[in-house]
Length: 134
Image 1 (cartoon, rainbow, N blue to C red):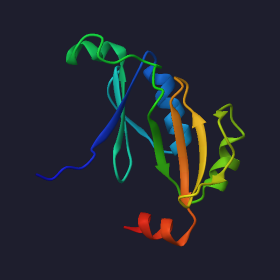
Image 2: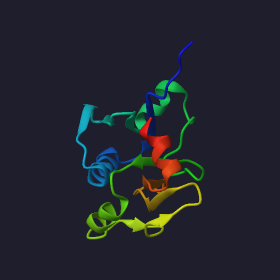
Image 3: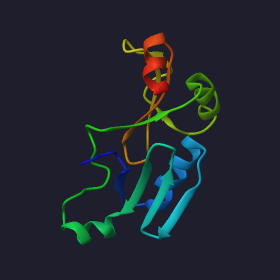
Image 4: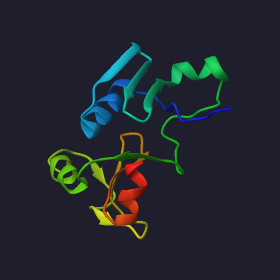
């Protein structure tokens, strides 16, 4: 069996607000399937944003909006420092400024409007650059 990540879905009470945030942060355009479900496609995976109204289709109460305290949505970008300069003109909640991590990525953490951590990163060490060049 071949397995690959296809999408990551975030459940929210306000799909339009969250879509606007992720469009701003990524510079990508959203495809809307319904007013309750939208997707932002990247070359490696799709970020799906679903309304709380969709949760009952799976199992009532199985997902709660604005309740993530463990996952970080991560986007590989060409130049995290340039992204920081672009984004700091807005009204984002920054967790940190671009910082080089021990594993070789330069990372910038922000929070989306529902509180989920979002990491924009650029590999900067030889090992990290080689890893992400695959």
